[in-house]
View 1: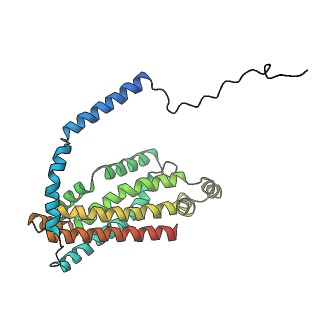
View 2 (view 1 turned 45 degrees about the horizontal axis):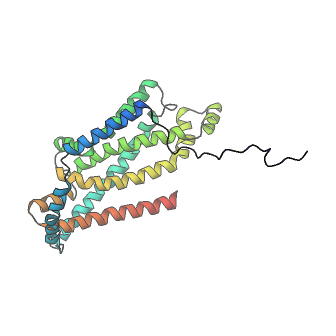
View 3 (view 1 turned 30 degrees about the horizontal axis):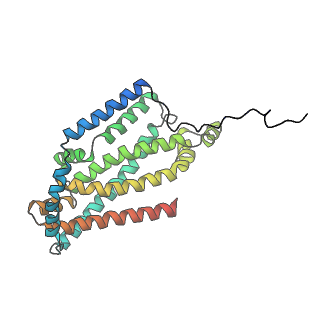
Length: 272
């Protein structure tokens, strides 16, 4: 029997899937509330496009006074810049070293006891939550003005930053080698040293290099509160209205941060 085109049921054209899921009443109300809070925050922060454009001539005047940058205090700027990098380097290295045992205790299947795990997690969260500028103020009061206070602040900041990512990296490694070593009677430290840390080492290196970049930028700000580095030079130049010297310092900071980022990226490509 011959089937004609009239006998074939017409197919309904395929409907494209919806691009967005339909919102429920609660989700819609939440979005409206978030938008209203954002608009209220704009008013609270006194955001004004008109004031911004009115202030552009003042910015142009400031940039004009910064040009050309002054070369009168290049030696002092160079010493302060070196001190800034030394703070960042020492703070990162010591902070990374101290982060490893704390991160081990903050890893669920490696921590010896749930209370130890919770204590390590709380310590890391506390170090990470308090800004490094606040740590610098505390250490300036403790040990006095100078780069030692800034270095201590960076160490604490790196423990909070690296401790979290180190713990997550160790938590995500393959459990197979660890179980094999345990079955052979290996101790907890042997499992950590021979199976966990080697597997998480690429993530450790990546996080450590990013920490050095972050510490280099942070160490500039710490100098503003007397914790050493080139930040104090920038503050003095701005307070004395020596904008040409401030321009030199800003360019030196930019060059240092750019150099550290380029070297860090090259090391990551070479090692990882």
